[in-house]
Length: 60
Image 1 (cartoon, rainbow, N blue to C red):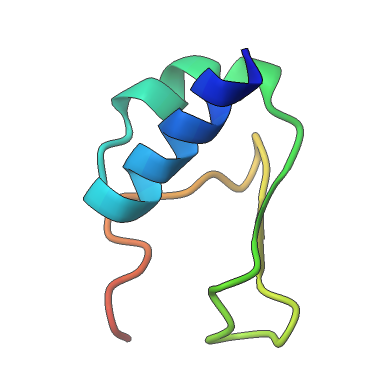
Image 2: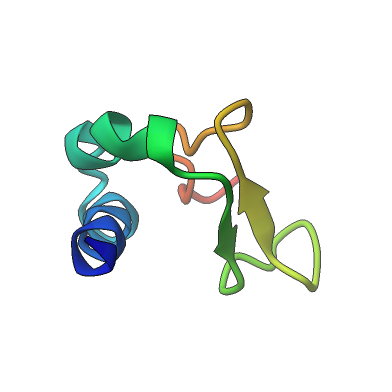
């Protein structure tokens, strides 16, 4: 199971393909994107209430 969860996050981050991650959000508590340091040195945090949106890694 963990492998599928990580794979769905990878698809979302690398290919902007959200359909797999959208199916798993009810089972996910928190996603920490340590590589996204645009706003904070600690990275970005995503949860059910603050989900990863389409185009989230586009330059601002």
